[in-house]
Each structure stands twice: as structure tokens, then as C-alpha cells.
Image 1 (cartoon, helix red, strand yellow):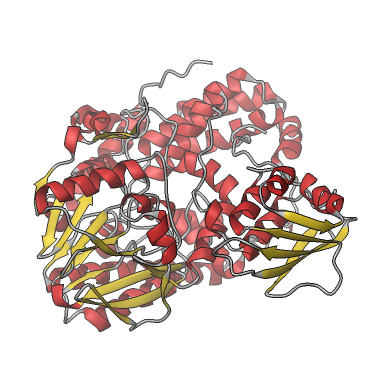
Image 2 (tube, helix red, strand yellow):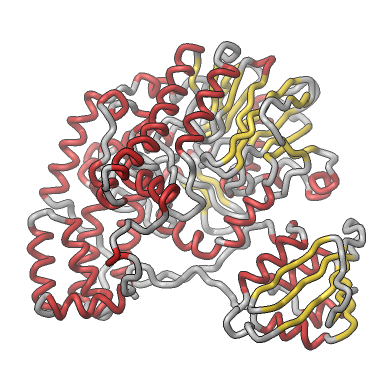
Length: 632
């Protein structure tokens, strides 16, 4: 199939021209500060390699953003956001506080009395090592005294190994601060739901699209996430409550523990001596996701709004600068309070108006279609839908409160698409008739309706090249018009896979596998089981951890009814087998990197019914995120 992008239609050109006109009324005053404090741009124009032929960061590829003609195939609002996010380098935010931006999430370096404190570390080791080198070149080499990881998302922890050795991280010699329940929430996304989330992230972030005016033109919250080798660690020091103060290398950090916001647990803080606050990823120069399209726990926009009010109440009279995780800072007390108020009101509006419309009887799809900001919010750049959108955030909020069911009995237990699509075609006069209607809708610029019709053909007849090609063309025009980077990438990736099929690639590990405790390992083992096939098994296993840092921890695993439950700190009175094994080795066995027989040859031992334990492991399923999305 041809992968050649198509030209923008007259309807797309008109839609993007209308957006360019509307932008004249946007309040973009804060955007003028995007380059404030720049010391030096990233080396090599933002080209970073990670020891191989594939770049982990390639900002020069985005030079097409400077071409005014790009607005034909890139929504002009998204185009401007990507231009802003392309501004990169080492920045001085205020005295003793520096950031490296333009690599995805920012790396913040705070100068203490004797060394430096690192706040978040980006997605990859390659980007973090570059940031470290750039800072040292301009500020001199300094010892890392501590690290703060504001939340659990992978683009904030992948470069930790660039600043802290595994030994110093695991021993606690260099404290790594994080929010309580960090490990549970990080593993729930990266490991438990990691396979479908990685598949969907490939769509959302346009990871497989060419960087071009007809491909990946930025992700809204940034221009690019530097990828490559990752080395995350789990925190060793925890923030457990709002108001907690930690003195770190001579500076006083006052924390706010934010729950159920941009991440399930997230840290905002004030550095008292620097009069600087961070709201992490909770108040950027864009509308964030209260529901993220890669899939994650739905966020609570009401709690999010109240959290920002609490920031204003706690620190509004103490701060002179606000810095964050992805976009540029806000300077001046009046400006930062205004910025926080926009976020407070925007997320509260999403919450309140969704429930208002639901209370009038509207369904999620209807709410997503009709919800609008008032002009006072719609014109504010920090509430434009470059990343989150009002439409999908409102649907997510409906789901948060009321679940996926819209109340209509016909949607309670519908047929799956592959079963219903052939029947739709039969009722509508056959595939040729539906294709003709889809083509008519496409030719009239009614792309949402064209997509709905053509998708029925593709799910009924997945080898129908004519329908797949036209559906790809349809998604492409929808992508060209999308203001949100994720929407654009999802549409264009769908078009690419309709034309070329699924591009299966190697799957890099998340990096947490060797750091999970025995309870999380047992939870993941239960997820991996083919539970229906293992449903008749009933075994109990006692585990004793024997590694030098494991402290002879005990646990009991109970396999019954197709699931694995566990008790920590005790053994069962009767067990089918008893396994003595170091924690890291157990992790390799459960994840599949080591067979039990190999573990037994390298220090592990088992007594009792060894075959029972091997039988349980035999029911593990290997997950690969290359299932079909746009075809059945």
C-alpha cells in the first residue's frame, strides 16, 4: 500500500485558515518569555545520539515548522505551540535555579550550599547525560546531593542513572525524594497496564510517524520526547503530607502532596530561599489531560482545581517565579497568580460543566461534542487544547463519575465491531453502497461521518483496500486539522497503519523490573497468567528472599481460581513448595528473563513440589503491544 501523504483538501485549508484568524484574539502575552534566561542552546542543534545509528533526539528535523506553508497541513495553533516548545537549551530561571528544556520534560538543577539537587531527569539517559554536561560546562562540576522525582511518569525518571549510581540510589546515600505510593502507581502504569499503554502511546505521541508537515509536528506538551536507554530508580525518601518541609543541602523545600491530579501522586513545592515554586505538570502553558488518550487512571479535575487554589493560598505571597516540567516559567507574583487562576478555573470548568450537562441528560459523546469554554477561557493560551482537549477531557470526567455506560440499554452490551460491522453493511445495502456514501461524505469534507461509515467496511472486510485507503485519507485530513498534538498523531498513525500495516519493533524494558518488591511481582504474575486455563490449579508456595539486601523477607503465594494472591511477612502453614531466592532473581523468573532451572543453578533452591511451581509459570502469557487497532 502507498504511504505517500495526501495534500490538504479545500475543507482542511479553510479550517486551518479560520484557526489562523481566530488566533488573533488569543491572549498570548506569556509566550514572549519562552526564551527568557537562555544561556546556550542544546549542542548540535538538538541532535543527540545514544551510542547507535538512531538519534534519541532530533530537533533539527523540526525545522519545517519555520515554513509558513506548514499551516496547510498543521493546525496553526498547534504549529505555534510546537514552535514555542522547540526553544531549547540551558536556561537560568532565577538565582541558583537552572533548567534544560527542549528534550521532552525539563530537567531542573537547583544549586544548594555544597552541591546540586536534580528535579526530574527526562525520558532517557542520553538526554540526561547531555543536560548534565551542558550544565557543568557553564556552571562547573558539582556533586549531586539529592534528587526529587515529582511524579511517576516515564518521561520524568528515565535519566536518573545519569546523576546517581545504582549503588548510591539503592543504599540511600543520595536521597531520592518522591511522593508516597510512588512504586505502586509507577508499576500500575509502566508494568501492569504497560502493554496496551505502550501500544496506545505509539499512536498518541506519533512515535512511528515521520517528522514532517504531514507527519509528527509536535506532541503539544513538547516537541519531542528524547528516547533511548532508560535507567529509573524508585525513591528512597517519601513526601507523605502537604506542608512537609525537607532541608536539602541548605535549602528549605516545602511540599504539597497532590493526589488524583495529573498523576495519581505528584509533588508541588516551594523553595523558600529562592522564592520559587513548581507545580510540576499541573499548570503548564497548555490544557493538560484529565483523561490521557494513551490510557491511564482518569484524573479528578475538581481536585486538580482545588489543588491549584491551595498552591495560591499557601505560596502566592511568597513566590516570585513559577517553573514547571514541560513549558517555560512564569515570572512575577502577579503573573504567576494569574497563570494559576487560569488553570484553576479551566479544570474546575471541565468538572462542573460535564456534570451540569450530564444532569441535563446528555451522554458522553454528546457532551464531548457540545461543551465549550466561555471566551474568557477559550482565548487563554494555557487553556488551548494543544494536549488535552475539552472534548475528551469531558468524556473522561463523565467516566470518572458515572462510568463508561451512557444509560441507553442499547449500549449496555453491544456487539463488538467485527461482529456488528457486517450486519451494518447488510442493512445499508452492502459494502459498495456504504463506500459510495463514505466517499460522498469525504468529498464534502464531512470527515467524522466518513470515518464512521468507512470504519464499518474495514471491520467487516479488513482486506478491502479501497475502503482502507479512503479511511486513511479521511484520518489524514482530520489529523491535518487537529489542534491537539495527540489527536493529530492518533489520526495520522491510524492512516499510516491502514496503508502499511503494523510496524513491529523491539520493545525496550521500562527499567523498573529489577526494583519491584515481592508483592508487586506477585501482582504482575497474576496479570500475566492465562487465568481461564489455569483456573483448576490450586497451589500454595512459600517464598523466602535470600539476597544480601533482602533481609530474609517471607511471603506466601496462593494460586487458586486462576489468580495469584499473596501474604507478605509470613509463610503459609502448609505449602506445596518452598522457594529460596534473591528478589532480583525472582523478578527475572517472573518477567521471563530467566528460567527457574537457571535460577536453581545460580543460588536459588526449592523444596517440595517443584513441578507445581513450574506448572504455574507455564501459564504465563508473553505480552507484545503490536495488536491491531484500526483493523479487526
